[in-house]
Amino acid sequence: MPQALRPLRRVRWPVALLLALIVLVGLVLRLRHNDYGLPFSYVADERNHFTVHAVEMFGGDANPGYFKNPSAFTYLLHVLLRLPLGGVGPLPDLSGGDPARLFSADPTPFFQTGRSLAALLCMAGVLAVFFAGRRLWGAREGLVGAAALSFAFLPVAYSRLALTDVGTFLPVVLAVFGAVRAYETGARRFYVLAGAASGLAIGFKYTTGLILLVVLAAAVLRARRRRSEWRSTLASVGVAAAACAATFFVTTPFFFADLGFSLEQLRGQSRIVSDLPKYGQSQTTGLLFYLDTLAWGFGWAACLAALAGGVFALRRDRARGVLLLLFPVVFFVYMADQSRYFARYLIAIYPVLALLCGVGLVRAVDLLVARPAVRAVVLAVATAAVLAQPLAAGIRTSELLGREHTLQSARNFLIRSYPRGTPIEFPQGATRTDRVVPVDYVLGAGRRRQFPKDSGGAVKNLKASFVDGYRRRGFCLVMTTSIERGKAEAARSRNVLAYYKRLEQEADVVFAADPYGAGEGPVPFHHDLSYNYYPAAYDRPGPAVTVYRLRDCRPGTTTGRPAERRLASTSRNR
Image: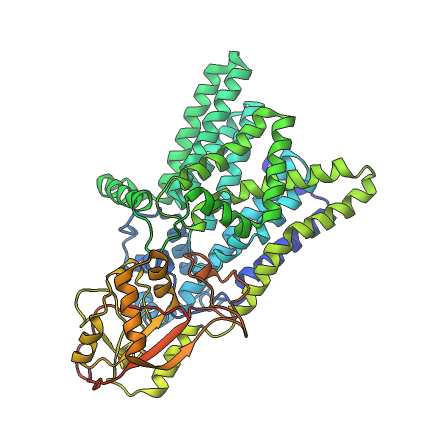
């Protein structure tokens, strides 16, 4: 049997059964109701990036044309869509015509296929954590680590969206494992593994390039440990670098085709993250923000276990401990130093935290319990206690995603209550008030469009005087959502809040829907929690939505007028 497959042969059936259960439950949490919100995607990155570019490639051009994100996920999704399995599961049936036309008519199966791909990539990372944990420590550490990653809330949440983040899990684990084994054995194959895995990780997310520090550190530590091998170690580093470059080239080949354009886009994206805070972003520091996200995204008990695991690893073998901790620590410090914070920016370190969580929990049980027969029971109870918080959130959000999205409720109300040609305003914060869309067009009279578009930073330009513009042009209906108003409240924007105040004073509410359970909410705006619904107050997906009708306003008509370019929303925190 090839050496790479020997771990499979050695897995005993009770361990294999537990691992299968972890993977199966993890998949159910991710795939159940993963068509929520569709055919409209209300997450800007999902809506605008990977799935769209994967569909555009059916036109014959394999160049995605943008490099703010690498292309590994886009290519994988494109290949999956090309498989002759149309109609199987979420895969769209492309036999009926041009994929771009089918996507325009109904993007649901395309987005759902992308979401399913994300779920599968995440579970590949879970399996990698098990096998890395088992090879480095033992089966118990591998199982606990796999469970920690499988049920951590943030990996569950971002396996329900067609985004690239969880694709980093598998290569990050392999890179760290390869680096540790390269240090311990000096074998060149582990340098190749670490380098190739690093290139694959970068192919999913540029920021994971920091994993190369682990590979370099492994070589430095090996050279210090075996000074006579420094020439061989240097050569191995070169081979690892070549493997990294080759793997990245496979995932993002057109990055090199127009290197100037690619680097320009990459620098532009880097400037946005490092210099431009997101509108409505929390006023706290990056350090405190990311510590808070770990508490709910990974689980506070799992974080404590991972911290204990890091201490155990350092005490047993300082060099191995350094290699295990280097990437999470450096990555955390780097992201905390940026100006723009999102919980998912930190998600690449979760598989390493899961490994350390397995080590910490197993070692703690071994220290506290002497009898081997009792240890298994105590470890099972301790693992269940650690996973209770994230698993409960994963189950609850899986359930609520099956309920009607609040924006779909608003859409149904408008279709039911107003005739075609009735104008409705979704203020985008533009300086003009004529960027409007007729209700019949917005509500899908033959074409599907985003409803409404998350206008993000544009809402900061709203002014109270816009209300006068609505009346002059006969746009008496105005729709708002709690997400956009929440951004303005978090940013303490006086002009925007004055706009909302005037709207409330001069308009009547004709429709309102919120996502909260009975007697719950409202939940303060949060750039992550407002979209992943972690707070227990949420009972269904979506923001709080309000449709106003302005008083002393004579409705105009848009029948026969060409549809405007873009849709947007404002918000009201109810």
